[in-house]
Length: 110
Image 1 (spheres, rainbow, N blue to C red):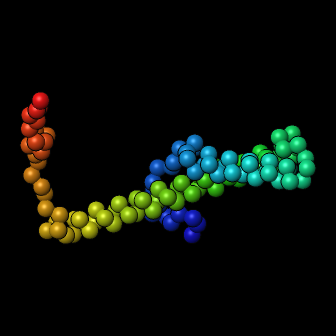
Image 2: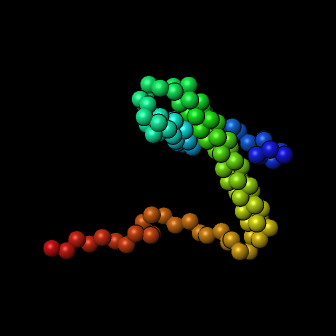
Image 3: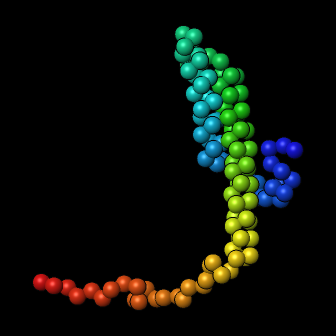
């Protein structure tokens, strides 16, 4: 069993560019630059291979973290919908109101 159980593999994959991937890729790149700066090397020019490697590792971790988050949200949605289906008496259908019925009438006063 890997990061995601077998039932989660039927979910659609997340986009390649997502919030977690971009964020963790930036963290990886900045950590490589910080290491260069602490070792008194030019931060942008030295160790470019390490910068690319750490950014790629961050992107990979962010992608798989997003897959895990999507699986957890889908599992919670499935459980919640199943609970609502099994206990309809706790979730009565409300009558629909129009917007005019909700908003109080407006009478301007001078």
